[in-house]
Image (cartoon, rainbow, N blue to C red):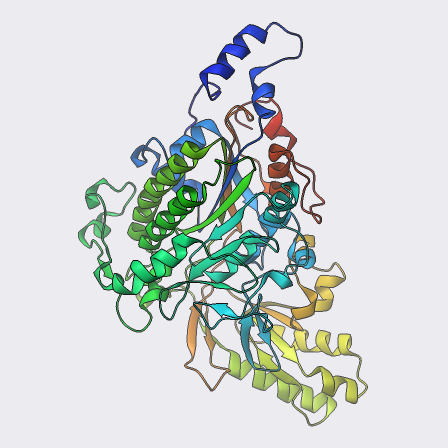
Length: 542
């Protein structure tokens, strides 16, 4: 990313005058004085799929008040590491709690139920009722406190904590246990929906759902390149001849919109209304507004990797972020935390004409062969009950009834799977818990919902998920990708702008933000804050 040389920014003419008068005093600095001013609004922006290389590639096309403003005046962490095994929901849980999934309880947005033979929301809570939705969700599965909780506690209840995101998991995790409200877009009807765990329904929500509902407008929403296709940088020549145009119709139109760039405009409109109508940041309390966006590759693209759509999504999001920051800073002193969460790699297969090594791994066949092997070893029975997302579940009741050592059986089954064509590796939950896998993998494993055996298929191969006879088989191409994303901390006057290139543990973000805000860290945040963020003597590129 190109280094920008910018002077230290200190808000307000009065502060600048005081800094001039007191600069001769020993140990005094404008930065330290500004940092003592308590922010009035914390604007937490979480972007699914955000990547440092795209921020660098498109920097010349960004407007002054969006990404470039945050990068020029904030602390940019190029590579925040989340570790394998988490999705966007799991990454947000790490960011907000400062703890790994093994502690905070959330690794993915859904977990597999062996009793119901299906995936269920990780935040499922049948004791709650959906508002504008039939979903029954709550933050009860989050085992520890979050940044939003700590801000509410610090304010003695006077502080507000609201969240808005396209999806339920991110909205609820960002609002935490104590939040005033958390809203997301209902896949079925397009309403902004919530759970009765949260007691408030802001007037902005009611007005939008009844006076300006998405259902009345979605058929008119379209997405096409916002600038001439020739101006998008680093675009292969052949892609310039096929500009995209997407509309949102049909049975899954709301779900499709939630994964597309235009949804970010809907989120910003609502967030700006929150700031205005609830006077967030303009009261005698520190509020937090958490907002979820997406620039993840669009699933509806006809182009592998959706490169053109992705670049366009960044340009559009840049304008939305500028609009949101402007609304926030007009309200009061604002701290901005912009965090990316890694998007999963593309699962689209490559054209056979490229002659890449590939094959097909059938989950139904693998499960059947493994079960036959265990029958031959231990007698008749349904030894293997389920498969889900690269993992097998054994019949634990049958294992107990036969008096078999479960760990030995899992190890035997993993060794058998290793001999199957297309399998790169197979290991057990015991390997993870007993340290035979990486420590990062152990941190990101929620034992209560963990499977028995994990299988890694060779990259480039296609996983044919045909185990469940009740649904259509799916094909997913295996690709590896690093689970990293950038984070930018923007606190004018409190932080010296710099770029940190070395990898940073995602668990250190929450305690670092807590220190900026002068509040206590979430109760499971065991990592220290990033000291280099606060040091004025460090190099501006590290």
